[in-house]
Image (tube, rainbow, N blue to C red; front, side, top):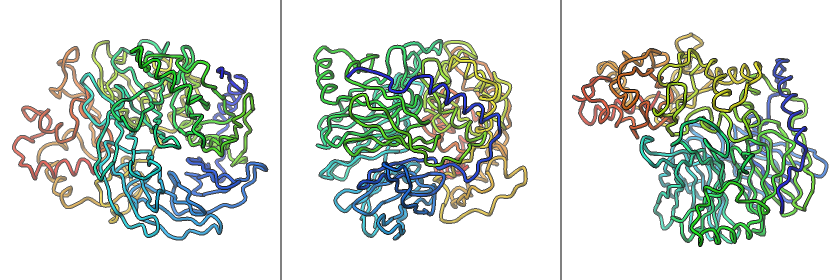
Length: 620
């Protein structure tokens, strides 16, 4: 099977041009986006889950018509279908799984499922859910919702796979969980077997892990992720110098033997792999590329044979660009932001998260994808377009990466990078984009005067392309209007007092985002935050003074240089800590790495006081 782009490249360029035009027009958002996040085959229909529309819709792929639309209670993150029942994971803090009867279109009930439940799987009468920001895998009785078990994941589980016999539960963890200043940093897989959870690190540099699938016979596992080359200066993009894109194949009988296979070609990146699926007969492995708007169709038996041959030769597969030559077809899709996918054996159905479309891709050779609009009248706002561009690798040289590659969800990747804006040989930990437009200057050493300057510089020096002025403006609009994700360390069942529109409140805790209240421990920690002097550098509302200060933590080529005080809002999700990622946890940051109490008087605090302080900071 030779690689070929099944739609001409000018079509993709035209789509980009139209998007830029619509950005200039400041379009009316109308009814709002659908933002399809999941798709499943349901008989002769296709079930599409709209994250923003909060709907589950059944689409007839033949006519392209919606035959049934079911309103959901919250924003859905994923679904599983068992017979005529859909289990829809929804919401953020205090998330639930709604049970939906597809034949009648009614919601039969809802089960509590933790903070941001994702990727539900039904197997042998049990329901499994990844509670992303609780970092837990939850097992429930599928009929009653009773929690039977829960296990710790490594960090932010975003996808689950369960073996056909139900004896093994796999979770992909989105980000690395350790310190970033060593020789090895990688996200992990979590395996639950015989009631115990074990974590297996993926290849060095693995981050931005998204989809996962288990083969129909249960023997193989496939995981989609970014494979970052974070140990080299960011001087170029050629041949995946900074980031490559991979699917890791693993024999489930040997979980410690991983085979990361690069999806990129030598001169064409395959940015941001997302959804993964085996065809029903196991003959093909299917991967969506959310950044380059493509679908990879891989001859899986041929891939296994090639991997076996390379294994004998001792050549690392993870270093082989073009490894899939002649056994993979790259299909250019007529949509933007392909994430979820499903297959009935004859066709693959792929959703466009930003284009609000569904693509039907026949699996027979040389077939052309068909586009099915899901929201034809919708015109995206500048903010929505900015999010689209942030995730779009067509604005990068050769499509190796998007802004979201190093800033998944516009937050952090958990890695250190040696950017050239402050010299070479002094890597820094990736900073979140959240609140960056309100906390200028930006970058660890404050080398960019504002986030607007940094956005344009990022396209030029990281994506190696000169951005259209309006493109950068739309990205700035998206970043300025990002909503916080309330901390999992808050009590979600006890909402805090309503936020106001006063400047001091709205700047860090956006109106309309429901937050839980502080625990008793965190309330005590709030007072310690003041008495220990933490508030001097981290005052409300941004929890930063936006100043460069001598923290005593700079080493190597940065020794003696001042560091920009970071905001503590959402700090619970931005590990590791300090400018070089040396602290795995917040407790380490305020104890082990705070000699001389230079960043707050913490040396005299007892264990309970330290716990209270950390609990408060993690609640911000």
